[in-house]
Length: 455
Ligand SMILES: [Ca+2]
Ligand SMILES: [Ca+2]
Image (cartoon, rainbow, N blue to C red; front, top):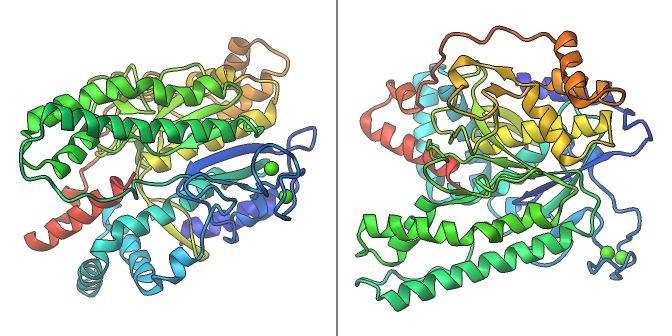
């Protein structure tokens, strides 16, 4: 429970600090919902000063009672529904226990025979709900990472639907060209509608930083296609997936293009793939006000699940077994580029707090230029390095009186570079499972993959 103690301490020591002008830095968590009932998040909940709960749109921004964000899936102001937990309490508790054990395995710890047996039994019990529960936890966990040791932040929740669309029975024949086109067109229409809604809401807020720990890839589209048309050959599905992702790029790009005053911090994805070779969106939307994040473990090695790409992924941050808040006042370690991205969003908001005059492009520049460079990340991410919170904040502070490059140089004097030579390679999760029988390994691995791919 080290992380828990750390969180509690820093919250206390940081109370009362804010930007120089007293205002907070608003960070939007575009995710599965944020549980502001959590003790960690209550103090950082954003409140719209011009809106009260009275069924009227007091600030006439088009959203009735948007006090702390918006639920885009249901078009109301409820950014988290406690019923999501209370209706599956037993399974939720079991999932918390399982995920804590999973994280220990992930960190290379050995479990006792009893713990192993418990994990396998509980995993079988919750397996079919794991996707759902992981999704419910997701936004609250992301928000907690942004909040930690960050007294000047306030969190605004933007809840989106996560693939809970209608399920259709598989068609057991080869689809015609027309059927495929119709399927893709429907999918594109849904995505267009989502981004139109998202952009419309974001534009009514004063958001400096937004976190996007989600996305879609060629592989996911191919998967959706083969789920619907099992007879479609894999290579055809892959080709269509790529074609679709190329077509849909600008729909995703509307987010940074139309909300220009916001820096969008985006997860690189958890397929262990090179984003320069396969399209992952919005990660691969390259704009002045976007920054894409890969995941490293606590030693700085690229996580085995993390996507990368020297052109399309900008920098790395910690994303393995990261301790943060989950609903029901719990804390849990979780893994993914979903957890790496909010680590960068947190630093970005601290940079803004130091110098609110910085533009999104300048914030991005500071984050990129103040990384801890590593030899082994040279052909992995664009900046060749891992975000460095202290140095980025030092650069932001210096940028109040200096040009950006001079401010960065000053930051390297304040927080010197540590030599980043040698190679570190993360072990795959599979390699940590030697202690289990092969049937157990299969179950655990499938659960792990499920949790990573829940976006
Ligand atoms: Ca309103
Ligand atoms: Ca109102």
